[in-house]
Image (cartoon, rainbow, N blue to C red; front, side, top):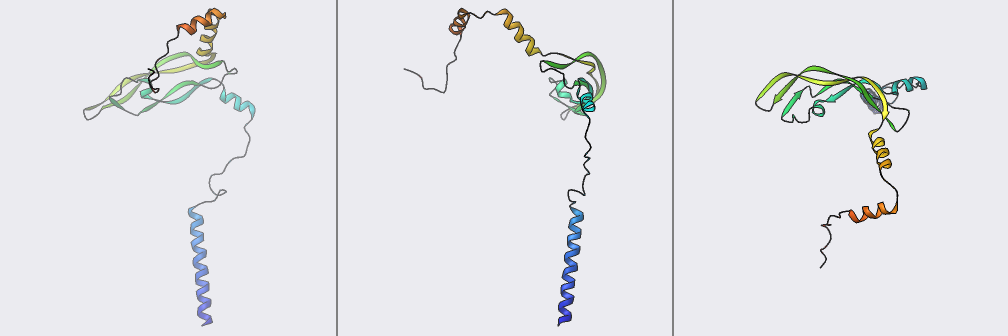
Length: 172
């Protein structure tokens, strides 16, 4: 009887051991999976990579051709060189300075009717630079045109149109 119980214990122990071994192979632990590099990227490298420049970007065709909604494009996005990156000042933005057109063959599919390979032109940004943001320019122009006297404020207050609030009960 003791002999039989010993075999049963050893059998269960072996079964649990192999079962746990299978589970550990199926689901790797943190250290077993992807190895994360703990090296530090130097400031100079980070700065060089983040500066305003032309970089390959995937652009959705509908972003470039928003009026052609009746078509399905294959591929739906194309690789284009576009300006991206940071400028040294918050008032500046990364914009294209030189552009040129590139023509690509894209399949245009009209739902249940036809499909053709057509040539479509897209804009590549070849040179980028930091320029003042459009918002900043318009704010500066507006400030220089308007005066700051009390009369200006009164005129604006009187001249404003208030649309009726449809959520309130009408006054009688």
